[in-house]
Image (tube, rainbow, N blue to C red; front, side, top):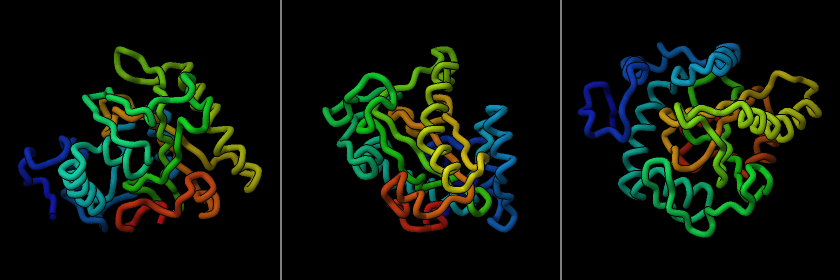
Length: 230
């Protein structure tokens, strides 16, 4: 399935942004990947809508998303059933009709390890070689501003504490380097799977063994087409 900027918008699984259309007009050879310093700047300035995939990966992601929605009813159901193994979740916008396996054991985020799971992002952003993209999926909601869906200061601190404990600490112990971890959480309007709580972690120059330690997997579930975890 070849997706181009000329495809009827009604055939797409989500609305294309201007940046998406610009990327789809390029070849992979013309595409400029995100470098580490650029990633830091995007996150620091909260310009998260500037993240992009390579042209070929964006086309594949569009086709794959359409197939998943046709087969599972929603992206949420696919991720909950096939990637997280938390059972089926019937979503409506940003809410879920929860089965028992999706109900958190503890109301406080990160308080119970059964309430979150770390996985490789099957469709990572187009970054320089050596940059890996993980997603922390959660059963517990993280408080955000009701006005714009962005993280509150207390929520930022809570996620940061978790990231330091789970990622920064072990990596510093192994590599004696501090600048290997970035994290961000898309505000609600940018999330493609808003009904399942999650945030993103970017890692630089980490071993396959560490990825397996965090995720328990060596790659994503889709076919290995330039996955950052392959």
